[in-house]
Image 1 (cartoon, one colour):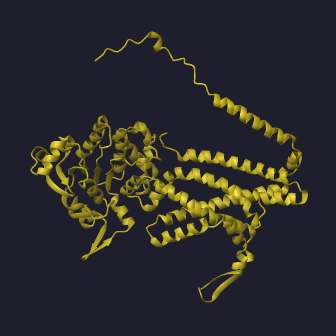
Image 2: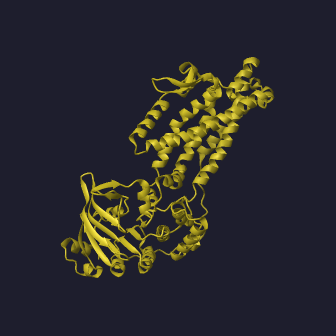
Image 3: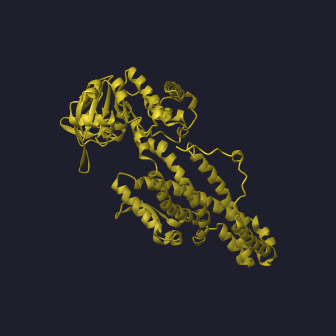
Length: 286
Length: 250
């Protein structure tokens, strides 16, 4: 064996080296800076944005009503979609072959057709089912109510979004549940926990860690997809903006103003998602 | 306490258990050794019905596991009855399988509170006592990922004991531990054996089997090849396969 070289005393001191140069970063700073300056100058000098007009309508009654409808539609669609999605995911993972097929068929149907088309159909359900009643299949009807008596545009919009969202949520929830270590099922089972308890207390809380990020994605997508229900027709935010520019012809200002609202709402949702993710990361080694 | 007769188990065409017969009496510590793939762990999982058996019978505490016999017909037990049978059988796994989203204390309290429906105060008092017994009182508010392997396995033992089982199954409890952490887990198991717990321990720790075990079973190829007093089997194995195995591990 060779003796180790004696360490020179200056090598023991804390390292003070000249860092690697990053010329690419400086080039990027200049490039992005030019683009940003162009954008800002355009936003300020281009009168077509008509900022005073936007400010005039930003908190006007029809826009606030549209914002309110957008918010409740998003909440209702996500709440309904998540609930139905969990149910469908459990059906897909069930030992019962009938439930498995039904869930598969549901997902196939609602994921395989465009949301826009589905919403048009939901908006015209009255043509498909003029009356809704309770009766015996192929037999007599016991009670019958005209569809339009209770089926409003709001109901059509919410229903259409829920039914579509559930198909996507089902796949997200299924992936989350399947990611949980099977050893967890062994441990819960060995302790004498029932299947329902195992699902609620052990599997779902762990699956949530994988379910929350894509669900946040879905919720933000939903916030914006509510703008499509204008076809039902239902007066959400974009619809409200459109009905204002239909009389004032201030098209760009109203659409930009709607975007400002959407950005504000989705920013709030991102904050919520951050805290949800932190909650379900409990106990995870980083 | 445990009786198995002609237990067979197949995965497809692969027969992993080929007619296992054994009996464990009350308070007995039975160690099961054998090469990997010999069916030791599978058999253990059959005892609390985590695996279904294809032939034979297993009784725990006089009750048939997983089935109900009426006349000469066997009826499968529903999930609830299986769960109820498992309450009396504790199990410790090679890879701990702790609940990562719960604190140390909650891991122990979960089953007494949800399964036995013990009130929170009672469950907490019992759980703290158990944590003290396995030396984890200081870590009660930590999460499992913050513990060492040995601490995690001791927690897993406390979690199983919280249901006050009559029988404890150990599936290679020290096999995924660093060598210096094995001792602390074996110490807890030794204490448990001295307190009179009935235990079936699948293990590679021959010293533990010799010192703590009341009986030793050598399995190979899905069958029991040799059984007897641990000292006797370990010192003078009669079967060639047992001899060959022991010469490799001892």
